[in-house]
Image 1 (tube, rainbow, N blue to C red):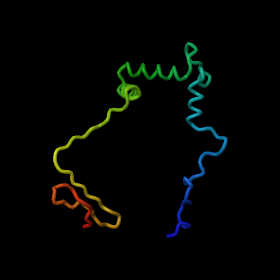
Image 2: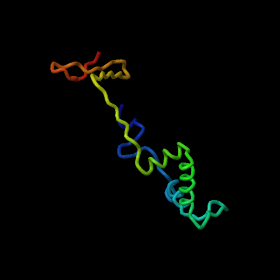
Image 3: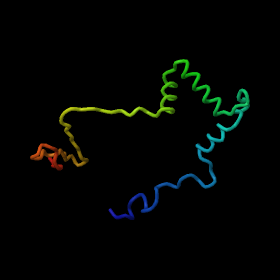
Image 4: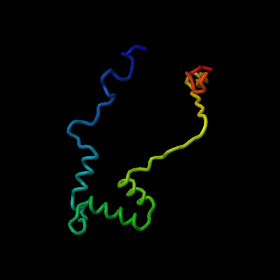
Amino acid sequence: MGRELTQFKPGWAGGPGRPKGSVSLKTLLKQALEKTSLGDQPCPNGRNVAETFVEAVLIHAVAGNPSYMKEVWERVEGKVKETVEHDGEIKIRVEYADDTIATPAPSTNGSAGGDEAV
């Protein structure tokens, strides 16, 4: 199949993107968080929506809601990296779309070698 028959042309990301002049959802959200009211409801004590939102989330976290607690913890400390420890040999099996199977061939020094189609 030649390049002229592919869906995307070289150098093109593949889509038209957002129309010029339109505002992203992220921008709209940031603008809304800076306001001191949401709809016709003013935020208490002259705070903005972001401050009110953070306080509401913290109230739920302190009350013991696990979802809110996890969210606050991960935003402040970062997500915990999951580590997996193993002892022994790891076997890998790769299945290709054309039904061939490749497994690492053992080498003479005991470590995994190159791919061997089966």
